[in-house]
Length: 175
Image 1 (cartoon, rainbow, N blue to C red):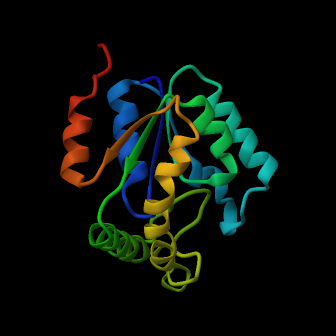
Image 2 (cartoon, rainbow, N blue to C red; image 1 turned 30 degrees about the horizontal axis):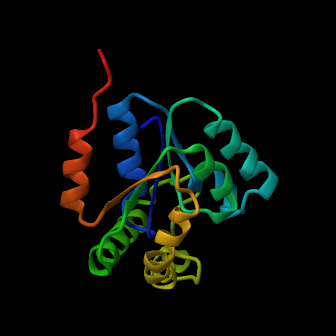
């Protein structure tokens, strides 16, 4: 594993998992959400988003998280491993809910000065409703999307405990 993409439903813990994996492997981490959400929650123009993804994935080693179809042709083609956090809906929904409440209450900065608000969290593209719009569709679509990239090693982790155990098995960086 040298170039790894971590995918999963909103709230599954992609970024947290990807950061931990990158740290264990001693490689750079890239977060597609940070590239996509500009200041004031403005969507980054497609050419710039793709340029950021292309520049990041041009490196020899990396871990990147995100589900953006507008960059799938770049990341998935260059990756050698796809880690899918495919947790049950109740687990992910609880994570989305508690994470959103925490972010709203603490005014935690996410990317480029953006912070979640209660109103924003409940919008159609906010995390709570986005979960309901995408969770089951992703579970149906991901196997076929992965099959289009037969060079990828697919690692499907179906519980947080399974993901934690798999992560513990990964090589630590040499000191």
